[in-house]
Amino acid sequence: MLLVGGAQAEAASSSWSWLWFGGGLATFYASTNKDVYAPGEVGSLYASTQLGSMVSSGSAWVGVSFNGGSASCSVSGGAYASCSGSGSFTAPMAPGSYTITPDGYYASPSSLQGPAPSMTISVVAPPTNGSCAATHYNCAAGTLGATAEYSNSFQWWCDGTNGGSNVLCTEWKASCSYTGPLSWSPGCSANSTWSTSSGNSVTITNTTPGLIGSEQYSCNNGSWSGPTNQSCTSSCVPSYNSACTSPANACGQTNTGTYSCTGTCSASTPSNPAGYGSACTSAANACGQTNTGTYTCSGTCSASTPSNSSCPGPTASLSASPTSVAYGGQATLYWSETNATSCSAGGPWSNQGTLSGSGWTNPLYSNTTFSFQCFNVAGTASPVSYASVSVTAPPPASCSATTIGSCNLSSTSSGGSSGSCSSGYVGSCSYSCSNGTWSVSS
Image 1 (cartoon, helix red, strand yellow):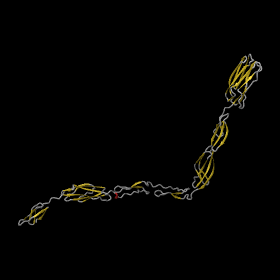
Image 2 (cartoon, rainbow, N blue to C red):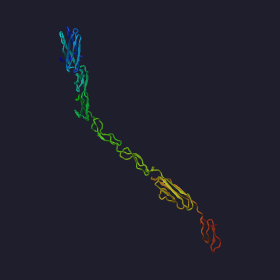
Image 3 (cartoon, one colour):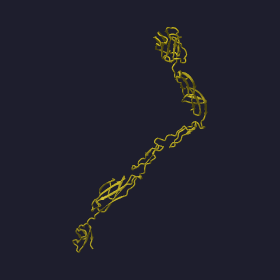
Image 4 (spheres, rainbow, N blue to C red):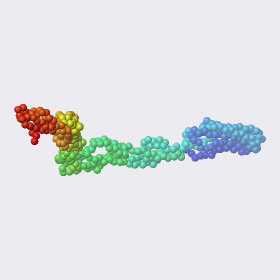
């Protein structure tokens, strides 16, 4: 057996044979199942021989082996006797072209045997697909192809081998981040955190009062470059830092401050006093009445106490029962009021300072009128209320016995008359009685 290694070769014939010519010819054959193998692939070997037509008796043998596998056969007999054999082998791991020659062969009789033939097989690596590595311009499998670099990424091809597929790989460039402060002439500054992806730029804007400016930084795969496009100039209004006054609140109060670089006043309008504008109630007048208002800037209530003149007017009521009595009789008086703080009696009676009540009159001997009047807290008087009681006239009074001059008078009822001369007098006399009073008769 002979092994010949080398570079990957084109496919060769998958069989070979030996021939022997002459009297008693024999034909020898040997072959593989194919002519191209993958590294370590298992293949098949075949061997066969046949006696020729001119052989009346004889024998033949053939054997072949390759890389751990073998096949052989032997035959004896007459014309056209044949045999065949097979075996397996493992293809070498190294790609290349390999030559296989027979282990041996013979025929009986052995005259005129042909030359020993050979056969070639190829070991070819399997297809490998291209595969990307983690970093740019590197392949985990396959071979590096075309490459390109962009502002925010790298790209490259990993080409497959032995017919494998190609793949396009991309690695994104690292972004950039920076936390301030930053400053640039003649006094601009900024303090913040800036970040952007590779291939982009950020603009830093000045925050120092009284100046306006900016500068730019560019990001390239995690690294900043710059600054570029720097500027820093004064931009404040002429009134910058001079005194200013805020707008007034509802009470006219203000705050003071200074003008900013842009001309705005730093002072803000003060808050209105606590409670300003909220509802409040005035003090009550004598009858409990109030007014509503709101709290003023000074904290006082805008509502004033209502005048007592707005209090409800008083009323007075007086009545008598019965309204007619006998001579010397008594009646009951009833009195009451509304919205009054004091009341007074008029006529022959007294309410004793009370606002309501009842009581007996004194004995009445003539028609009598009583009055009652009340006053509220503001001093407003009510209309006077009257109650009248009529008294029935008494019977006429009789005249008592008496002597008037020389005329003796005896007790006589009203309307009667009496008279007689006293002792020692002669003649006549007469007096009339009228309601207890004597008068000379005509």
